[in-house]
Length: 478
View 1: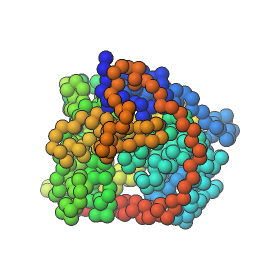
View 2: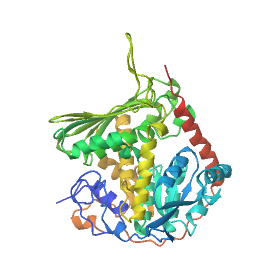
View 3: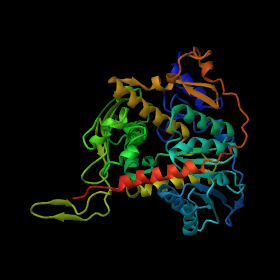
View 4: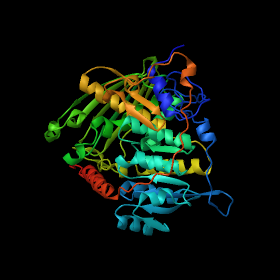
């Protein structure tokens, strides 16, 4: 049996161990299916040696005998504070140090949540001998280096998406964790939202029969500032990525290809930007095996709050979700019947419970030394899907996800490149012809602890992050 170059490349670069099962593009995620865990072009086995060899160096024991995990948090902006608050609610987990380049924010967070130490330098968190795991809540451009640094120092990692801003760096960061035997969980919080989980449960239980069509919509209350959109990676990478990931989560299968289109209706100023950054509205159709299709529509503005809904049509019925409101009050008048207030108008409010749930889930995986429920490979798959959508919109055609994966070439586990940016195909880059070709492990590379001083750039990026969050709070209300 022959496998595509896509399967070969992603497996060889995203896995740093052998011995796992391979099944073409079959799903390998226990959160997606009840079948036995395997490895696929998108997924990584949850029961492989990368997790079996992982062991926490426990620094303390709680009085009831349960393991007490000590953690550090990098980034004390609003999302960092959300996670820090969730960490304090998790049993047998103690935050011991926080960092932020604007040290006053770290100090304030430490005081608010009773954290013993604070610092301006993220490396103080990563190299702290007390810390078992690190929460990375810094600006996106620092994620990959900080993940690698954590792996080099034996720290388990929770990282807000994305893992990195491009595919090769994403692969390198995952490899670093796989080789070091540390857990890596990516923050795709919608997977932990009770509304989406109920749809997933209906699929698993076949409550509405065999799935036929999945529909998702994601519409922000108001568009972000121009400064955020410029250089933000485009509407598929910075917005639709959550919905694309959710289609995969609900489908329980790895996708085949995608067709995407974009347009501009809300903010005409962004028309001067390049690629999908010039779109404020987009639609995607994703094809899955056995005829299942998923449709996603996203828009940077709705006039009625944060619109996040899901629908599944099955052979025996349909399941759908509504938006989340601040309360259940309704008004009944001769000219109006409906909710008294609009849906939540900010993502931190809408998904607050989901952020807490995902944080506690990772804490539990640390305490129990079990596999995290949303791995680096899930983050990698979401990135691949968003990149394929970008290509589809630009070239007006169906794009196989394998096209994106095939562009990655790794000299070794720590040095990858995008062949689309290269003039020549590297020597030795060729599709596999046998299953054995897929199981060749990446040679282990001894890594020295990573030290870097990027405080000045980090402060600048932190300001950009605040602009993003500010832009998402500017909801239009009636």
